[in-house]
Amino acid sequence: MKIKGVVFDFNGTLFWDTHLQNDSWNRFLEKYGFTLSHEEQKKYIHGINAKDTFEYLFKRKLNDAEVYRLTEEKEVIYRSMCLEHGMELAPGAEQLISFLKESGVALAIATASAKNNVDFFIRHFPLLKYFRPGHIIYNDGTMRGKPHPDLFNKAISAIGTKAEETLIFEDSHAGVEAAIRSGAGEVIVVNSANAGYNGYRCRQITHFNQVDKTLFV
Image (cartoon, rainbow, N blue to C red; front, side, top):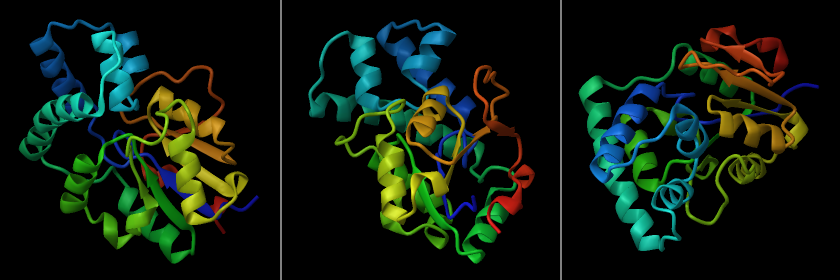
């Protein structure tokens, strides 16, 4: 089936920032005296809504004000690191997105990031050149986080394609699980951090020029 819509995760997918995410989380966790194993970070941090992460860390329910304060505390560290290290889209990403747009493929982003980070990304990347503002779906506090498919479902609905006609690019394990649960016709794993994805039958890429363009034409 021809792919008519594409949904991109952002962090670790369109922007290869896993090392910056890890370093900023480590700094945040150290401040509060938390020590997480690699498996815990994979399960409870990467690709997960902030509320779910913080409630796991603090072992209690948090109100919206607490989640916002903690999120901003961590993300101020992260955004500072981004500016220090430089920011560019993933290898081959802009070329692929240009091809998709010219080919009439509907495009969206579905990210677990909150609005402050999304606004930051919009200021520093040419996202609005390719994506309508209403097609950049983020964690607004109304949806369950990945591995639930809510973010992807909303993105697919926004671009008006059927799930089976949609391809999703993801990098985190929670995100891949969410993409599969959305019913997407194709899921491609962007292996930006040289991680293991055993158990998934999805294609894997390490550069966006590896994407088979015959999927769309």
